[in-house]
Amino acid sequence: MNILFLIYHGLDAASGISKKIIAQVEGLRQNGHKVHLCTYDVREDGHRCRFVDGEVISDFGSGKLAALRKRCSYADVYRYCVKNDIHAVYVRSFHNANPWTIRLFKRLRKAGIQSVMEIPTYPYDAEYKGFPLKERLELKMDQVFRHRLAAQMSGIVTFSDVDPIFGTRSIKIGNGIDFDAIPLRKPMQHADNELHLLGVAEVHYWHAYDRMIKGIAEYYAKNPNPDVKVIFHIVGGVCDEDLVPWTAFIKEQHIEPYVVFHGRQSGDALSCSFDSADFAIGSLGRHRSGIDKIKTLKNREYAARGMSFIYSETDEDFEHQPYVLKAPADESPISVESIIEFHRSQPMSPEAIRESVKYCSWKEQMRIVMSAL
Image (cartoon, rainbow, N blue to C red):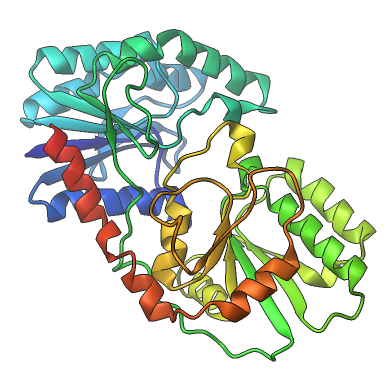
């Protein structure tokens, strides 16, 4: 099948989302499909452009008018699909249902081209809590038009167990793993009295790393000279809205040596962070955005690296794995003592943990999508 994989933004080598998209494209190709990747980005000269496989298919120009045009004009995508005999469009939702995206997919459907839309997290309205007015107004637009947009789709790809979504049948998959791009960790040896925790994310409030930071504070308040020194390493971007109060709390509690912000990492630097860590921290606050059941990419990346980890949502692939510690889905600080005890009793090697998720490849997940069509 000839497929256009459509996203409404560019790619970033350090972004987990970008890595996921590239892996999904490769998963489709591994199933025998010919796949073209359509992206949008701003060139160095300031021109806003839409690309397919790196080639410009539309140059919207620069300035405010160009920004408006790229939001309203999708005729280039339609023309590309018809001209190049595209059979199906796989689009990643940008929460941008509006009359122009509806028109695009309605035209594609009339031309005999099937479309499926992936909604990375569902429901997602609560994720906009605290966002600037502009983003909240865009969500209102999406709320008005999303059922009509979904009606143009052959299915909605979801990592939840909800069916239907916006009145359209859902295609349920899990976040996949690109084993070629995720190396197995090579654990470094630490002193017996040290435990290094690692959280890797573009941090949002639903990651709830503040719960882990509060747990660290409670641990050292009760044990000023503990038998086990626990250090929480955070790798990834943290917005000022979270970073400012976190750093103030860390300073107030005198735990600066035990919470370390490393910023964004990729490649060898990221692998080194995994090698240096003993235990990983997944999402601890999906309940904040109204989500219970979800199959997150991060849990699968941790397992592919060979890490044991903690999370608070319901993820059917990991609920009974011996290398997973479940946290309560509430606002309580995370118990550092429980992590220490769990880590000491966790018997599985990195190789065994990685082997337990071999079935979660992107090839298999994308095969589910295409089989549904």
